[in-house]
Image (cartoon, rainbow, N blue to C red):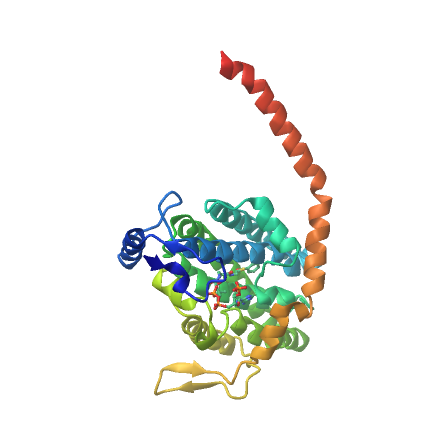
Length: 331
Ligand code: BYC
């Protein structure tokens, strides 16, 4: 027998998987086959996917808040229309992702409860405040930019429903990234005050964006199994480096500086190298002590409570329709 629980990092119950099925599954992953909902899969693979996809969905939903706050404050009708559309896209991404997670046998209610009770994680970045209009530029350029770097790789994830959901999400995120960069460009070419606002937004978002890729590889709990099963195609550090290499020249083009005196291009490696990341800040945010953790969950819980009547009305409507259909189906 092959003890799947030998994967010590998975926190779920110990499951001893069938050796033959396990070997076939590993071979399918190695051969880049897509795993579909009705296919056999080890419990640890299922749990990892539910964890990652639901955290991803929660991030999209919570991620609507920092930008949603600016819809009423957008500086023009055009900016307002674009921002509304972007925030709606994020809501849509959350819904696709919840649906993808549901194919693994978990219910939407369970996922929502895990978020509202504070048990489930969502991306650390959304626990930082958006203080000025320039933050809408920085979020689009940097946060969506970091998200795409990670999500392009997820389009090739071994789990079919997740990989397919990612394709459309990436197209939309790519538009989000460009609209953010365009806001930054407009501000950077604007008045001194506007340029300072863009610089301040970059200063505040740079380091938290580098943390979005997760802890360093050496301490990443889930990476080994996720890479072997082709859920993750690149390690946390590799994706972080790709993001740094792509983003630093974009910042310089804006005429802005990065809040890192040690940032240097190393000819020998062909990479931009940063100073050390403050991982204690990341741990603090994950532990619920970031600047906005409490506010984000409070708003989410309140929104859920305010929407209770809509869910109830939808349930009653669905029950009525089902009742009406019953006699017809019996004929
Ligand atoms: N924040 O072993 P590791 C967006 C946790 S939203 C919080 O490396 P893994 C957008 C990790 O969960 C896009 N927690 O984990 C929306 C684990 O804890 P648990 C969001 C983090 O899973 C609105 C522990 O640390 N994107 O685009 O192999 C507006 C150890 O980490 C974070 C996704 O969700 C973090 N940053 O790798 C604008 C992408 N990093 O679960 C934009 C999908 C790590 O054991 N997710 N942790 O309690 C992934 O690709 C992977 O889950 C990660 C982490 C790379 C994030």
